[in-house]
Amino acid sequence: MAKHNLLVIHHGALGDVVATFPALLKLKKKYGRMEMLCEGKIGQLARFLDIVDDHFPIEAAAFATLYSGRVDPVVKNILLEYDKIVLFSRARDLQSVLFSITGKAVCRIQPQPDIDQKIHVTEHALSNLVRCGFLEKTDVDTGSILSSAVYPDRRDPNFDRSRILIHPGSGSRKKCWPVSNFVRIARSLRARGKRPEFILGPAEYDLAEILTRQFFQQDEYHGIVYRMDNLTELALRLKASGGFIGNDSGISHLSAFLGLPTVAVFGPSDPQRWRPVGRNVTVVRPELDCSPCFETDGDGCEKMECLSRTSPEDVLKAYDSLAGRLTPVP
Image (cartoon, one colour):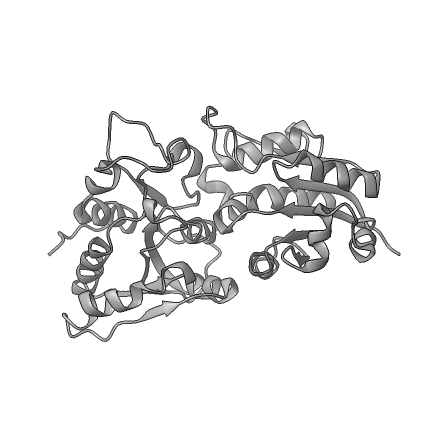
């Protein structure tokens, strides 16, 4: 059986994986064919964007045997096809299992840098690939990897400049700016002739009724709320749009990667570690005495000033700075 060059294993959610896309593209350029074992929907997205050549769904029952002590023979045969494996995981035991099966190099990288490291997750991935010897220092210019030069505009040539996608959700409700603020943003965008459209992931489908009540019916505006479960369809919609406004979420990371003008509202999470990176991205977070606490104090504080002190005017001004225009929020 012909060998494949590289397998990447990542257990993370959308934002965690998208943040590694620049590193994966460098790996693919160096090693040629590359496949990924990850959540099935994310794997389909990575294949669609030509980040990887193929993928395996990590939620499949056969791959669960990697943790059972009796690995499925089919999984063993799959693993034996690869010369090298990159494992984004905190599990040392899994690294040992993979090495015992393949006898080949397994580069294990923690999915996120330690909390005391003020380094972006993308730079963290790249520096660890150099540490493992999977990339050379000459392959990675860490001084510019977060610059716009390495993020081309991946949108469709005929994207609709008037369509602005708004995502009011996130993987955690603690990171969500109030929905009413996103509604005010949408009203302002509509008033200037834009086409604001809301996108919702499965975790926030319940917001559809709220948006309809607060925005569409009140304004007699027959807008659109998309319930997006298929990440490839989401990418297609993003690629056809003129801009994006959202919270600290995986969709914001994807928007930035695809090249949309992207504004991300940050609250308790640390932009230095987690800001979306792309060719045209702005993060909005007020200057506060307290440090971002999402990774150190999951409950957060009662006032959540990191979110409440950001106004719709602040976010719209940030978007206008990307779009080259400024209009007050009505």
